[in-house]
Length: 355
Image (cartoon, rainbow, N blue to C red; front, top):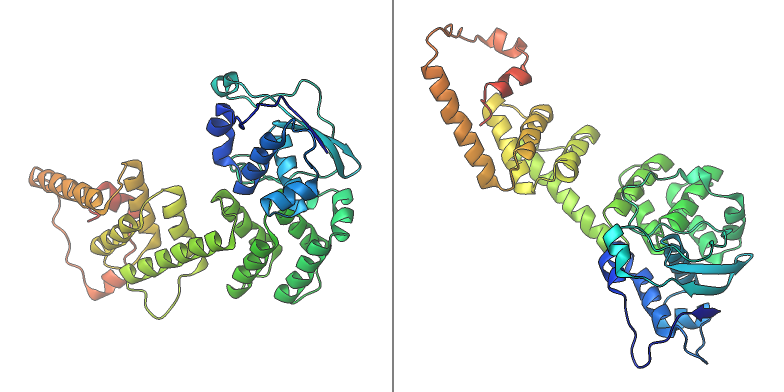
């Protein structure tokens, strides 16, 4: 495989635009391959075959090929292929202008279409993800001849306790090729989902996309994310006094929303649960969600911030009540009307009584 680029004697120059624009969002193995290509560029007599690059970097040829397709998609390399085999590639020169415009470097000549879909790597969190069922028939035929993929399918059947359907197989191909998950990571994904009582392809895909968006590329990273998530659920259960049971599906979704969407630290979430109990004397994920959404919008970042905003609201409410002499006297609650009373969350939050 021929690699064309100007040679810089005695050193390997890494363009600043690569470091500033491309490196931070790429899988580490993809970066290793690109740096190796820079090192090999223009070196006469060097073995630049996929096998040689894989040996040099302690990767598989599949890993190297996946990296090449990734960089081709980012338009940093131009591949020339014959069938599914890469015959040569050209590294695209990068300039500082690429950083200023925020555009991808564009090769001088059109790209040669690939017959195999490239893996997505870790950077495509903002783009619409294609359904696994859009995987090409040509790709599926190639994967059927891939011993590693066949082994993965065999293990998947054991975990899912069923013969794989065509949709199951395409989902595995999607994780393997499009998301760039390793065999070990996919196996752990299956183990994680099955242990949680979930064997549906849709659930597995949802978890995989979440890992992809979180930048998960190794089993250890996935385990660390799982540990953090389990700890969040335990702390919320403890704050709400929910002993003797695990959180339900909707409750877990709420906790995930507070962490991933509202971007609140665990200590603030726990304080939101405490505030909920003080306000309505019972655990309510709906009420806590309203409190935490308000705190998120207010920029609350610590438990101290949350306590300060509650104190301010309490003082403000007392002043408001002191100046309101027309407020009707509260009716005394009886056991009957207390049990039958429904909480008006909007009115309660508007009153500032969430402390």
